[in-house]
Image (cartoon, rainbow, N blue to C red; front, side, top):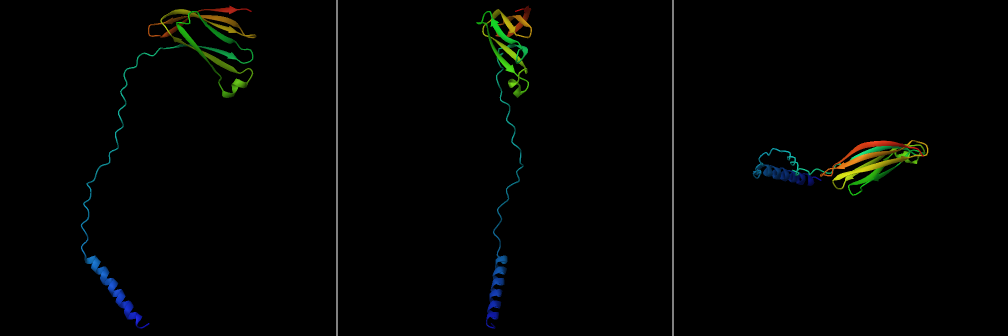
Length: 159
């Protein structure tokens, strides 16, 4: 063991000398720092320039109310279907109401111009327990296919 102590001492001295030599060596020059660059957020893209829209045909709508289990059913008749098209949509106020007797709903008719001109359209409401009527409208379709509806008269129908 006595022989190991001087050996360990020499080893420790060698390590210290090695560390000292490393500290004495000049460090390689540091890489030059990159100049500070200010971080600028990218600019938001400019909104795309859209050409002015051509006037889209403007439709006209009629809305009627009814209820399941006896409310009026509506039917639309257009005198000149070459001038005007019609589509309908039924809307219940709550999703589950379409399964309930007596649930109220609205029927929306949308009229779109097909060709310029004037025609009449009749909305017929028929019900076994509610009032029956025919609502007559004049539909004017201009050169841009915009639709204007004017009520002409409403006639009570007795069945």
